[in-house]
Image (tube, rainbow, N blue to C red; front, top):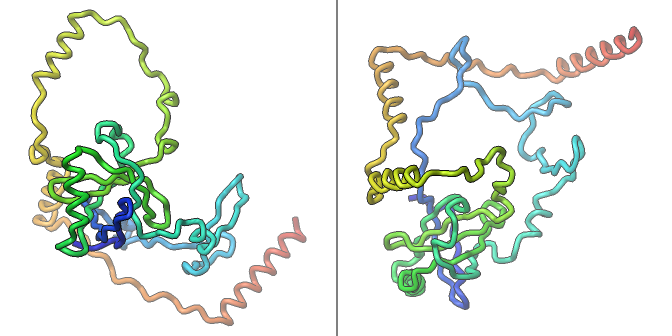
Length: 264
């Protein structure tokens, strides 16, 4: 499993070295976009519409649009200066009960593995969380962004789940046409409760499959079997633009623009 982050859990005065791994993976078939005419994969290009040319990453700067068409530029060094010194720390702030956090706050899950198999501090935190039935509220820097998270135990492993800040969860007051409380009959409520109770079971994750993905895979295999496939043509080498040719084209464009200005 690929280690995507190395750091430590800051638990009071105790530091627990950990490695972070992605706990989940999205199972879906990924499609390439092709040009319908010739079945060539389409390229994504960074291009400046004003300069009419492709640009490299070292020519890109971040800008915050504070009003339409107006930006405040922020260099990477400026953004890094605002981050806390402990960029590699999962800093535990508080301990709470898991059922006190609504699932709407949860975002993405990561496994936290000990950097050494005989790490007593890792075992100490894991077992203490099990004994108390609590989870830890923590703060961490991921991808140059300060993120709120929880640390809890899953099976026999510490996991970290990033969670949204309160102001990132939209208020239900923004939802139009939420039904008011209409008058329900006692029989209606009783029948609804009975139906829920009859459909209630123990959660077994293996009972649920992505039937759409299974059907899609089957359809793709049938197309392969019946040779309903296309082959992308060989890419043509990019034309090397001669410097003189580019200069001449630029001069011609300037002359055309000036001519249009005079005749307009």
